[in-house]
Length: 366
Image (cartoon, rainbow, N blue to C red; front, side, top):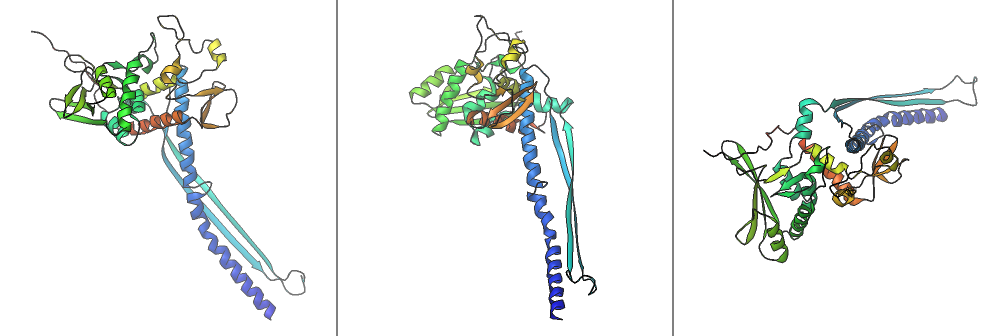
């Protein structure tokens, strides 16, 4: 009798523990192999690979193509069952009690993809990056020289290789003075002495002005001021106020790039396999002096995308294209930071209202 009572309590305890395990799917829905974190990581990796893939495409003069994940839904199905049986005495004396159970769960995800085409493509990739976005990036901690080198094509008539912002490159890019100016701006940023703001005036049209201020004293300040044509002094600071695009005299103020122009610019930092160079899939660029241009001088300190014929082991992000692997080394901090900045800009441009690009306005004589 005591034996049967012990078996009864054993069965009750087993069934209680078994059915109390119904909280397993809730944990797996968040942390498991098919849960929220798993989808989060998968989408992040996919976004990184898509951006790198499009950079490589641009380097080969192929058309970029984006497919965004617009929605993810998933349904978890859970099933649990348990059985217990006590056979009639005498039929199976060696096994008076048998216990059994079954647990299973199923994850059925539904992913929706939205190709970036038509007006959405134009709005997100071809619209110049807003000046307020540039200001917010710098005040959120990004280094001003990295942001300016990637996003600004020219300011105060200092050119940042505008020839490298598109598919056609016919002369050697000019960038040395621009780089020196941004280096000096970074000098003041590290000392918390650089001020930057955006002025919006409501007149006939909305006009944006980017304003930069830095200290009046010091050799670095004098050097930077000597490079800027529109600088003036105010309250012990040098101040530079630049209109978006061109002013009424046809002078360049500040001209930001679009996301696509930023991508063209960074695509020159991709290492092309020698076999593709020999087959003229990527042309050697020679300027007026008939010499090969060293893209590493222009892009190398921002991003380096390596290439190889096998899957790289230590890759931050890697994609296979035209039978070659292209990747950013996980130990290359500068490249990772620039790549992250490009991804943030891409996301910030999504859903922005379309704005009229800068218009060249010239005064007409009577």
